[in-house]
View 1 (cartoon, rainbow, N blue to C red):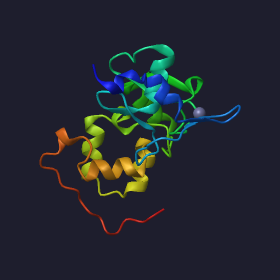
View 2 (cartoon, rainbow, N blue to C red; view 1 turned 45 degrees about the vertical axis):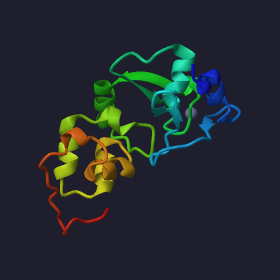
View 3 (cartoon, rainbow, N blue to C red; view 1 turned 90 degrees about the vertical axis):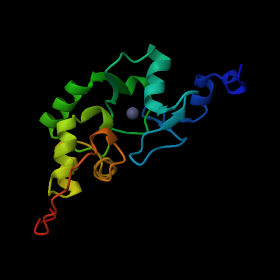
Length: 166
Ligand SMILES: [Zn+2]
């Protein structure tokens, strides 16, 4: 029996939430570079909005992602969250052409082909993030090989100096 298990995750969780009346409930604990809340669940670091969904609804089914209706990464309000499959979400985001200041978790919505495209594309981060609906941080992390490590082998980025910044 370990001591930290004596404090249930739900108790630790709600102590780090700031509820805005009528609006988003913001995570005030640790966040990653994309603004998503992070929380130690006793086994690994996990997304705060995912923990919130699980506290309300039970375990997230395999292969599904917890997504934001409100496009606000630090928000963990259960009524602002919904479940989507990786693929549905990816298609939906591309169709809507949504930019990702926010709500999406790059690990969820990108396919391996997308990641290869991002790694080898001469485009800068800004058009790429708009195209795929992820954050600058997510693009950077993919290009620097910090995410999607299993796809790291033998890819080079083509640098195009003439590209316009628009
Ligand atoms: Zn919200």
